[in-house]
Length: 233
Image 1 (cartoon, rainbow, N blue to C red):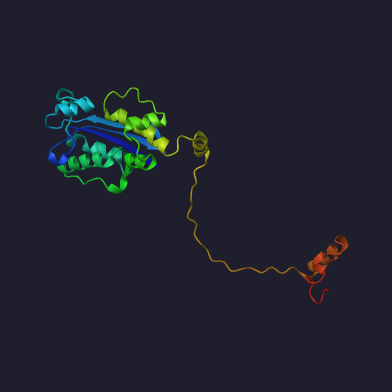
Image 2 (image 1 turned 90 degrees about the vertical axis):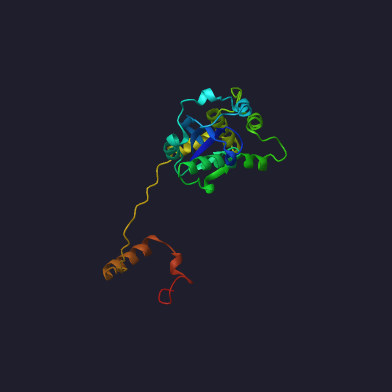
């Protein structure tokens, strides 16, 4: 089961008012465990980054100067995402920004059926409690001591661990069993209709078998009623 944990950083909160993506990161999971495969890119938003946004994620105009535009990384990003489910914390936010960027590139929007919102999962599991990424890390024992700002690649790595814990945690026994299990290969076999073949032993063989049974088996139950036929009873 391949899944992608994704996070974006942006110039603001609303793509409909002109805010743009300035960083995108994605981490590959296979059977709920990180594989080490990642996608990461800073992006030129083609506009200024407001000071209030910089205070949240730490990126300034100078940090993204000379970086590729979204159109330059769109194909590589879509190839990395493939057709896998996409996990994000407050996923509608990230999907909305990526859809706006994809629209500018004349590319189709992301299929919402692929969206897994870890924030919605956390609200269901921990109703009435803080469910931001920092709070979940503390609650689930995930070390977030390196998280000084909203860096997308670090957030993806932390969210991957949080998501794993919310899905039940790592179970090494099951992981080893999965690795040891042989791959099941299904072969297509042509169906052939065959008529039943009745084999009747010769009379001499039947007589020899009956004599052997009478000599070796005393009071055979199948020779007594109700098993025996009228002829043998």
